[in-house]
Image (cartoon, rainbow, N blue to C red; front, top):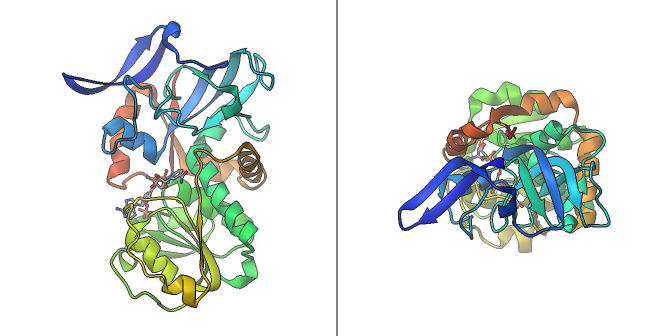
Length: 326
Ligand code: NDP
């Protein structure tokens, strides 16, 4: 038996609780993992609260990421005792996920736990941090360089935003952080932000072309914030767009793209190919120090994950929440 968060939905309604499950109920997969830590990401909050139809099969164990130790494997890349990390691939949405003491998955979905990190540290980074690293990789591959000007990060105190600031700062960029929590300015400066801006200035509809301010943007918000950010990108700059914290809409004009040659770089972490994942984790191993991680993360036990999830929906969470499943 093992403990897991279980989301059930039937005629009686929708329920989420910690349940004791028989290992025989684990889904198909060629690798079984003893999970050490999982986390709460924005998507997990949507799944646990039911605020958005993230979960596509019931009953479902949520948790889009985990770090742990392989206990059984029929996959050539993984042996019992190996430390592994999983991000995405529909785990926690259509395949039982990481908010559990045990998981069974397709071995192709796993990457080795980077030697720089403990399982807890890898989950302090989690899918949010790995996505931030994918965003930085996208901007650097595009050709963004520190001498081109400041990079704007939206949703700055969130999981993706916090790690993006730390990584960009380490890569030599001046970073401007947009936040709805001005009281967290010290936290953002400590992560490496040079400027902290009030989200209110970005959150409403603005002109299609505004003063050119940013060499590039990492956007976790979508909607008006993404539209205003695009309208402020300097000639030839780019935005790595990965999130929808403000909204899924994009109420913008094509003006920045056709008049300033701005590029919109979409970033998806769920189905990203393995090579891109490994590069993103390499950057995290190299550039994210333990002190920054400690300031970003706090820990909750499995039983408290349900209450903690609710905090994401009103934007109150700062940084990352690690879940100790044991
Ligand atoms: P968090 O909840 O940790 O952070 C989101 C941040 O956005 C908040 O901390 C807040 O920061 C800001 N925010 C909250 N509500 C609003 C609002 N109504 N309008 C504008 N800003 C708001 O989430 P994550 O960092 O984990 O994820 C951020 C986004 O990225 C989410 O939309 C998530 O779904 C997406 N994502 C996408 C991935 C992909 O593969 N493309 C992978 C991972 C995440 P502040 O108060 O500082 O403004």
